[in-house]
Amino acid sequence: MIDGNTTNRAFSLVEHRLPARALGAPLHTHRNEDEYSYILQGSIGLQLGEQILVAGPGDLVMKPRGVPHAFWNAGDDEARLLELISPAGFEGYFRELAPLLAVQPVDEAAIGEIVARYELDIDFSSIPALAERHGLRLG
Image (cartoon, rainbow, N blue to C red; front, side, top):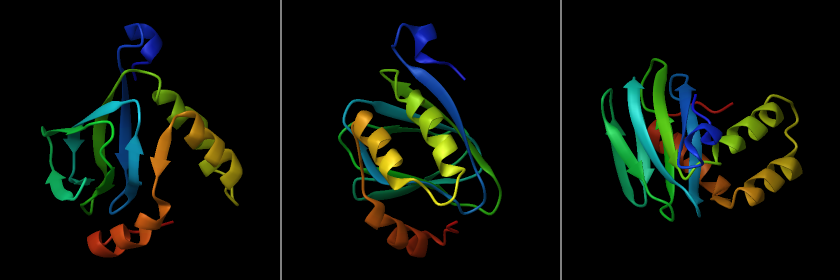
């Protein structure tokens, strides 16, 4: 929506659309960015560190760098949120990742290179527990 090039790298703004009961991201930690999620539609479940919360339309949630977090659609309808990312640059991660996730089998080595380049720590082992605990649909 708003690329960091238009904000002098101060921030970027992206929109996420999540199908019902979909995982947006497993537990992960940003080394360089703070994220602010503004919920437009639906219910978004979040884990911030050890805290679990559900945010709805009009809610704003801060996900500070260095704090492990995950998010998912906690409802039975599509959810939408705006993600403000500061400083800008991480919006490129989504652009690079999208085509790799659209192809099966997934090229794990290529994804690993992108994750490393954006200095993101992802705990893929958190996926089964998140899915079971929050009734998420995977795949």
